[in-house]
Structure formats: structure tokens, C-alpha cells
Image (cartoon, rainbow, N blue to C red; front, side, top):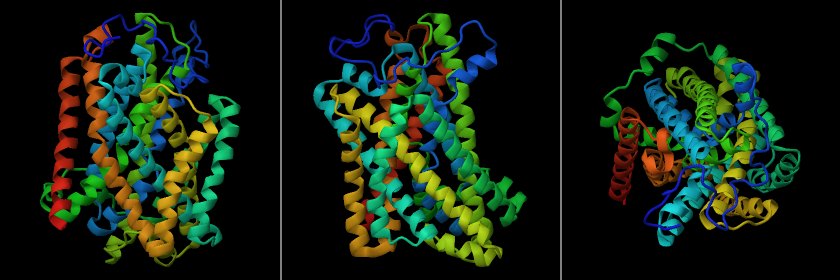
Length: 449
């Protein structure tokens, strides 16, 4: 297929020669009832959205949300809300791309762009996955220390063991993986629901916080945290992930079948991301209600937050639930990070390596810097590394978002499912906001040095 005229055949055209289906072992492995009530069909599509939503509440979100809540109260809730709305739009586009074209975002890039561009995009995406995995490693290690007093260095090393857990789940089928993710998400939501009740936030302040404020753009410190929140919320690798895992469902390859699949897939991801919005907002609200209201505006680290919750709320259950949710968050993100790494490597490079080897390589890339920083700078250094990982993710976002919008706008590849004018406008506005914020972040970083 020509690089200059990609997708010049109908969207149900088989993949290019030598290119296997995305996530081949699970591709079209789950049946969708054809002559059934709408809710039964919808339930068949429930799952991928929650795997995607996991990336929107990983330990990296915790660091930025805690810092934002303690420093600026409820003000940055509007950033979480806007980021979540952006995520809903972008993830719906990713799901639509996979359903309509039968290609994930990485495969689409491989077919569309020249090999040098493909290699650059692949490297950038691998860096984003490494940054995500780094946040998961550090978050899980912090949780192990808080719950079981395991030293950070040992906790970082222990996280490598999750390779065995993931391989076991993959052997039991894709539904088993989705079910575990949903259970862990429910655990996180329950923990923070209780912490919210204990924190007794100012509901007037909470509602006001969801209204955007010009102060966010005027205050450099606030803007830096806001960009970190966007980087932690809209995860670039999730766009690759979603465009692939929607293809695990067996759907009718007709216009009606694809339209139905897009509807239920979008419902699934929107509901799941709404749950992620609740959890992210809850983290910031708890931080604002407990720390900011007590004048503790410099609480920016997960460990400090854990230790301060008990004396400020007067009960140890608040800290315990906080740590349990953190551990569940880290393990949940690990599961989806594995799949993303596999999808990205297979899609961009069209090569396949054993799942255990891919996972081991991904985890070692994250563990090595975490071990070095922990050994040299201690726990404080790992917390700073956690926030830095989210800024790295934010910088990588445009390189995933822009191709996604280009592909879903293209009538040659999408046919009748190409983005309507209103969706094109919204999508490019989102991309523009992301690019502008990233340019600002780069300029501010340069000025600091």
C-alpha cells in the first residue's frame, strides 16, 4: 500500500500484507448477541472503556491532584473536568477508528506515514509508556511501604513480579482481565467515597471549583500543575490501546453493525471515564478539604498525604483506605500498560515477541531509573520523578492526538463514519489547546535553566 495514498480502499479491506490483526490473540474473541435487547448488546461491549479509564486514575494522577488540591484548594477541579471531557472525545475517536477501519492507531500510522516518521512516533510512544510504567512502579512501591512498611527500594523491585500475574490473566481470556480491572476500579471508588465522606468538603467551594478561572493561566505555578493534570488525565498510550481492544468484540462488518458498535463502545468509555472523573476529583477534593483548609499548602507528595490524613481527620481508616486505593491504582495501571506496550510495538513495527519478554523489557525500563533515584535521592526524589513522568506524558500527547484526528477526519478511510464538521472543530480545538500548553511548558522549562 502506498505511503502517499493511505486507506485508498474501503474500510473493510483486509490489512496490508504481512500485518496481523491488532492484539491477535484476543481479536474478535468475544461474541456480541445479534438479536437481543439493546442492554444485552451494551453489556457485551462493557469492558474496554474501563481498561482505558484505568490510565486516567493511575498514581501519576494522585501526585498532581494532591499537589493541586493542597496548594490551590478546589480551583483546579475545572482542569480535571475539562481534561475528562477532552478524554471522552478523543477516546470515542480512537474506538471509532478501530471499529471502522479494523486498524489500531499504531497500524494506521504505519500505513499512513513514511518509515522515519513511524520510527519517531514509535520511540515517542515507548517513552510515554515508560513514563506511565514509572508512575505505576513508584505508586505501587509507595503503597507497599505505607501498608506493610516495605522499604521503597525493595518495593520497586517487587513490582517486577506482576509480570507473572499478567501472563496468568492473559491465558484465562480477555474477559478475565476486564473483570479484574473493573473490580479494582470499584475498590478505588469505594475507598475515596469513604474518604470524601470523612473529609466533609465545602460543597459550595467544590461546585465553584468546577467553573474555569482565568487565574489558572495567570499563575505560573498553578498552570504547571494544570498541565501536569492534563498530562496525567489524557494519556497518549490510551488512544492506541482503545483503538485496539474495541476489536476484541465480534461485530457485523456492515454499516449498521459498525454504527451500533460505535454507539455501545462510546457509551462504555464515557461511563467509565465519568467514574475516573469522580475518582480524580475526589483525590483533589480530599486534598483541598483536609490540607489546604488547614493551611498546609505544600503537601505535594503521596507519602505526606497518607501520614497527615489520620491526625487531621481523627481516624486511621482514612489513611488505610488511601493506601489501599493507591495499591489498586498501581496494579490496575500495570495491566493496561502491558497491553499498550504490546499493541504499540506490534502496530508500529509489525513484529511480535513473547508477551512475557515484552512485559519484562517494559518493566525494566521503568524499574532502572526508579531504583537509581530511590538509592540516590530517597523517597523524596521518587515523588518528584512521579510528577516529572506526568509532564513527559503531556509533552507526548500531540504526537498521538493529531494523527488520530487526521485519520478519523479522512473520508477515504472512514467513509460515512468520518467526523462531522462539528466534531472536526471540537477535535482540532482540543489538539490546539494541548499544543499551546505544551509549547508554554517547554518555554517555562527552558527559562528555569
